[in-house]
Image (cartoon, rainbow, N blue to C red; front, top):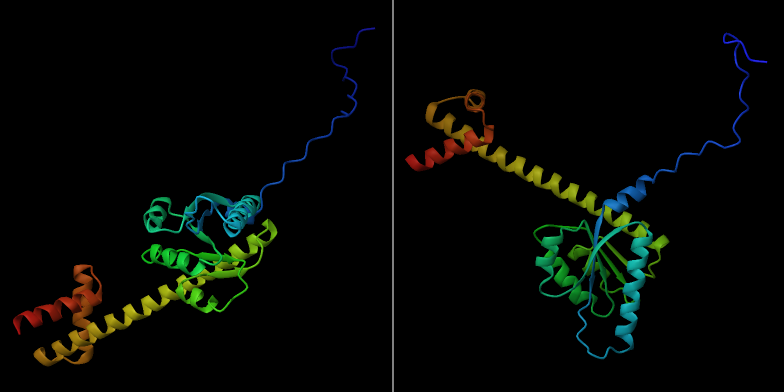
Length: 238
């Protein structure tokens, strides 16, 4: 018997296929790690027949690379700590430098600090050497974290995160200090310019400041720049 066109059709049975769940999105930590360009700096090995210590160093480096990759970091290069390091770092532009060193740690650190002198970057120094007498020197030289331990994926992430946080905090302190020094220097220049106007034109301090401020607004430049121009002109005229 055929079904009338106006008669509603019978409901379909529910599908036995489950609706797939959306894939979990990467965490913020994983995304931030993927965006960090990490470089490992190693001792320079020149031996044609490496001894046991050099073989152990190679194995340490291999485990470190594995740990970084398993932790989700973007490992872009492994570089020797030689005189060409500044040029290589300038070309690669890493976000973070991991110094993997043992007995030659101080020598490598000197190369790394020299290479990052003009463009500072967070530095993490890893070593199996239990002698920590040089930790203070390393931190003073610019190392953000000094770790004497193994380097598994679970261990490396918090170390690098702390190093990045400390580096960013220190850089903010440097910027704040530079701003404070700059403001102090500008204040000295403005005060000197006000003194010139007060002495040579018989203005009060308020009048001298108002004239400098008005000139800065008319020219669309900073008050300190107007003050410096006035000082330069006064020095030129004598």
